[in-house]
Amino acid sequence: SSELTQDPAVSVALGQTVRITCQGDSLRSYYASWYQQKPGQAPVLVIYGKNNRPSGIPDRFSGSSSGNTASLTITGAQAEDEADYYCNSRDSSGNHLGVFGGGTKLTVL
Amino acid sequence: QVQLQESGPGLVKPSQTLSLTCTVSGGSISSGGYYWSWIRQHPGKGLEWIGYIYYSGTTYYNPSLKSRVTISVDTSKNQFSLKLSSVTAADTAVYYCARGVIGPRGSYDYWGQGTLVTVSS
Image 1 (cartoon, rainbow over the protein chains, first blue to last red):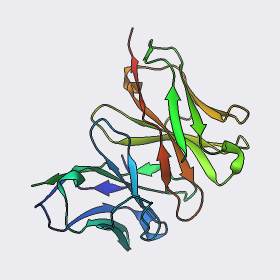
Image 2 (cartoon, rainbow over the protein chains, first blue to last red):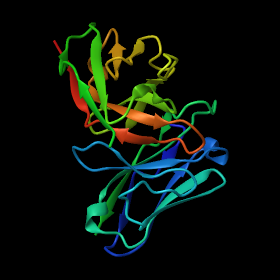
Image 3 (cartoon, each protein chain N blue to C red):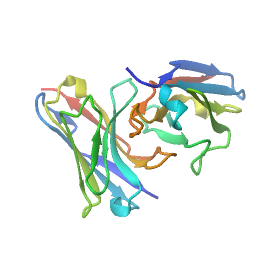
Image 4 (cartoon, chains in turn purple, yellow):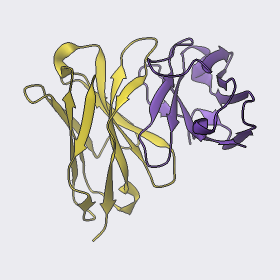
């Protein structure tokens, strides 16, 4: 079983704000990174570190963390944001980026 | 722009060894600062870390796969490879290679397109 727990599915109305969460003990000590995956495509990094976006990722994507929970927030969700989202962080040893959450399917209504 | 590309057979027979290669372009594997990684995704499922290798050859594997996995690197060809032995149908998945950034803000910043490997007789 995964050491990072995500809600299987979340929905948001077009233009509204949605938060996708990821829970795990390792998140008390280490940052999570977040990946967007659309059907038939490879995952794409959208958030890393405290709250960093790779070049080309819209600023409506942001990250935060509190205690054992990391969050990905999409402010003003667009139709193209409909995708699966995965969090990733270090395993319980803290040595390796070896744990992914089970993924959250985001539906934009 | 770094690019990664997986290559290898799309069909492997049960009990045989799955072998894939990832070719890196736009950057050198030997530059340091990165873990060169394999990640897989079973059909309709989530992501599973298989392991990674540093350019020096140091490897780290998922404990659940460790007994069957070997990851190697060929810096002269700017490639790294995955071997997974004694495969079963449960190893049918899309296999991705990815670049893992070392450090507190670690993440997988570049991914290959993925290659589907089916285990079937």
